[in-house]
Image (cartoon, rainbow, N blue to C red; front, side, top):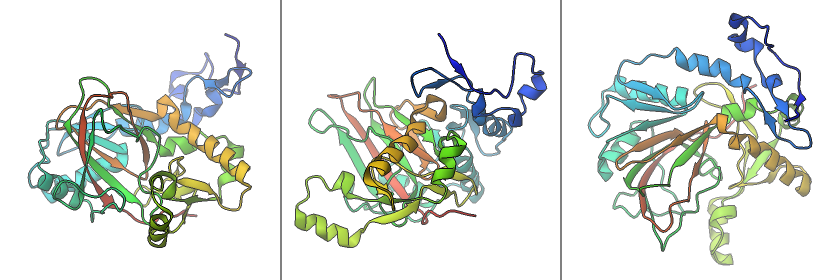
Amino acid sequence: MAVTTEPTGTTADTPPEEARDPASLGSAMRVRIPGSDVSVGPVGYLAEERQRLESLTWDNFDVQRCSATIGAELSGIDITGELADEEVADIAKALADYKVIFFRDQPLSARQHVDFARRFGELEIHPFIPSNTGVPELVRFAKSADVGGYENGWHHDVTWRETPSKGAVLHALEVPATGGDTVFSDAYAALDALDDDLRGRIDDLVAVHDFAKVFGHGMSAEERATMREKYPLVEHPVITTHDITGRDLLYVNRFFVSHIAGMDPDASTELIDELCKPFALLEHQARFRWEPDSVAFWDNRAVQHYACSDYWPDVRVMERASIIGSRPSRAR
């Protein structure tokens, strides 16, 4: 296969210790297939974060990492009962480091579920997805032959809120024998994937987020107007700074971003599409295979997620509690 080689940070003669130095690695190691926008080769900009995560140790649980920079399965801790403050602090740190964390064999009741989630912040009530569990902060998603799954697109949750979710805790009650995985993608890596020119172009841009892109379907004009009064269009920086880690990340998704403020509509659509592409890169992702009583806890700022809708007409039943976050901002 003929490829166009971009300038490389390492060669076959590079000493091993230099090859391990993240400063010698970068997107320059990638090569582009002629006649396309597809690049192949080592994703060098992941090396520093991958190596940082390799060095972490934990006191309250064991960790099995899922991929280079995102995802970890935590074992040796029971989240169905009362957790000590130091255990909660360790889980919160693991969430910030790994961006999404997973637990197995956690038979949470509805009350245990919200009690666990509430240890990490105030819980939100979704205005378009009413609770159907008897607990206001907990929503059940029951998919079957009659109710399909429509979450199979990359997105952060509720970015149309002035203060989107900080995170979400999802518990599997019933899952199909095959299919129904959830995939998570690293928003820090998505930003690092952009070339210098594109990164410079978006540095000061603001995206306009709109609930109606997804939740407006099926609403009457009157219903939409009522909800618009409650949830007007909201602006968030295209690049936002995580309020815990202090790192910049890419904060654009196709589900809820209406347009880029101040841009021509066609140019805005083209740019949004370009910015969403890095989330589809497999090297940025962790894929979770659900089992009954598995739990995923994700940082809604640091990742986008994608629920695979490949199990129809089988049944998949999940329950989710979401934690209220802060308004996205950009540190300078």
